[in-house]
Image (cartoon, rainbow, N blue to C red):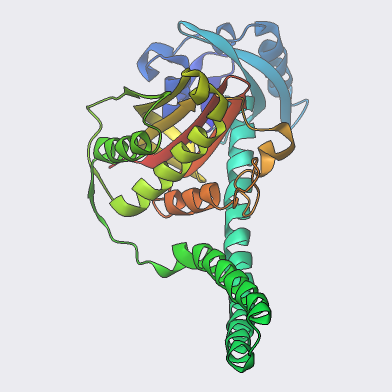
Length: 340
């Protein structure tokens, strides 16, 4: 469970703590047993009052907000629920970190949005593709009948624009066409491949820094799709750094870490890969910050708005998720993928 759970005796002493609570407090279950649970809150009186109400049967369940103290870390704001447990004389306390709850809500919106986008794109692309072929074919037939060179310029415009739209449609449909080819993936090989491709494209003014945790194990995945997903994100970052590249001050950092006991995509995982792409650019514009993974949404002139959409699709095929945290001077795209 991702919820922090404690079962208390009537006097407020801990009788049971689940793994999520152990993890949050940085203390083992054995250490917690028998300790007054209210001492782990910045305001112990709130829990003590709630426990008194539970003992007096003043309510079936009481909810309030508090701050939970942690070992060597800042307190975390939590939503607390206090209710009678199944066993007489026991009280059940559940806690949800507010930041975690907000993050889970955001992840669920991203997943639902991605599924809706997938269906919309697939249907729309097929609807556009059929008449496009007819328009292009009609323009070619018309061009064969024309004798004036000036008029054939117009048919060439029609053919060229039809081809451009066809290319866009093919890119929209690309993630749904290619099979998922699973094999052993070393994430640092993926990072190095992307790094070399970007540095070829931007040989001057851009530094791509490495910050790797080399202990990360291989996992099963589609190497080509992960390279494409990471490349799309890194290229986006490089394009946002145009001014800093010209000044010779542009940096992109590729950072890998192992996250433990994390919840995303509505599931809890013991281990997960955290891959960060961090740049020192101007940041994502506020106007599109909540919509950057939508198809055809772009923050720059001439952008197709498909790069991040395709990246999110490829990562979700690995049961993962991409998040973005951006302020002027620092944008951090974080890729999360479960590890074995």
